[in-house]
Image 1 (cartoon, rainbow over the protein chains, first blue to last red):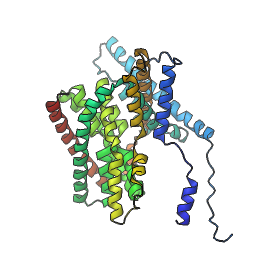
Image 2: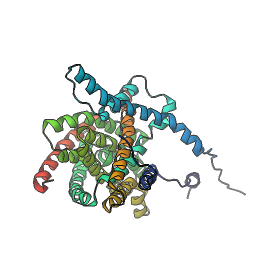
Image 3: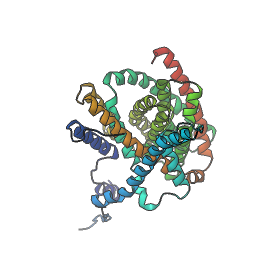
Image 4: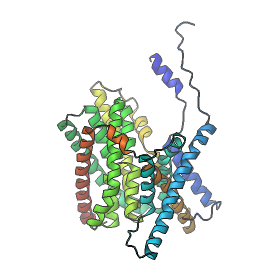
Length: 43
Length: 361
C-alpha cells in the first residue's frame, strides 16, 4: 500500500451516507407520527 | 523513526457548524416551495375572479419556475448554497415516506412489470448511447458516463461510475451538465406529450420513471401530470435506481480489464456500497403500512410529510439549474445526450404502450 493510499485511508472517518441519513430521518419521523407526537400534518 | 508518513492535518468541520451552514439554504427552499404553493392556490382564484383564461399551474411547476428565475438572474448567493444542496436529502426522505402510500401487493405487481421494463430500458439505453458515443467520436469514458447517466439514474450514477472507472473530472462534469439540461427539458415537455397522447396516469407515470434520468426531475415530471402519476414515476425510478450497483460494477470490471481502472475487490461490498439505501427505506415503510402499523390518519400524515419534503426538492431543482453554466460545457456531449434521450423517450414510450396492452396495468 502506497503512502498516498495510507493517507487517504486514515483521512476518511466512517460516516453515514446522505441516503442512509434520509432513511434514518424519514423512519424517525414515521415513528413519531405512529407514537402520536404529530397527530395531524396539514397540507 | 525513519520513513514516517506525514499525514495532512485536515481540520474537521464541527457538525454543529455544518448544521448551522445549511439553515439559510433550507429556509430558502422552504420559502420558494411555499410561495409556489400559495401561487397555485391564489393565481387560479384571482384569474377566475377577473374572468381570465389561465391554466391551472401546480405548485410543483411554480416552485421550479421560481427557483429557475432566481438561479438564472441574480444567482444563488454563497450563504444559501450548502442548504440548497440538501434538496437530494429531502427527495430521498420524501420517497421513503411515500412508501406508506403503497401496499406491498401493489409494489410486487407493478414492481414486477417495471423491473422487466427497467431491464429492457437499461440494456437498450446503454447499447444505444455507447453506439452514439462511438459515432460522435467521444472519449470512451465520457461515453460510459453518458450511457450510465441516461440508462440508470442521472447524476448519482455518473458520480458513482466516475469513482469506479477513474474517469476525468472534466468528463463527469460534461456528462452531469448534459443530463441536467436534458432533465430540465424533460420536465416541461413530458407532461405536454403525455396530455397530447392522452396517456393514463399509470402509463404516464411509468414512462416518466423510465425515461427521465434524474430522480428529482422524474418525481417532478410525474407530479406535474397527476398525484397518481407522480407515485408511479417514483416507484419505477426507484426500481431503476436499485440497478445502479450492477451496472457500475459491470463497467468497473470492464475498465479494470482494460487496465484503465482499479480492480474491484469484494464485489458484494461494492454492490452494497453503491445500492441506494432509500429504496430499502421505501420498502420498509411500505411493509409497515401493509401490515397496518399505521392507521388511516397516520398514513395521511406521512403522505403530507412526504409532500413537504418534495416541495423543498422541487425548489432545489429550479435553484440548481443554471443554463449559463450548462452552455459552458460544450455542444458535442450535449448533442449525444439529446439524441440519446429523445431516442430513449420514444423507445420507452413504445415499451409502456406495449406493456399496457400486454399486462393491462
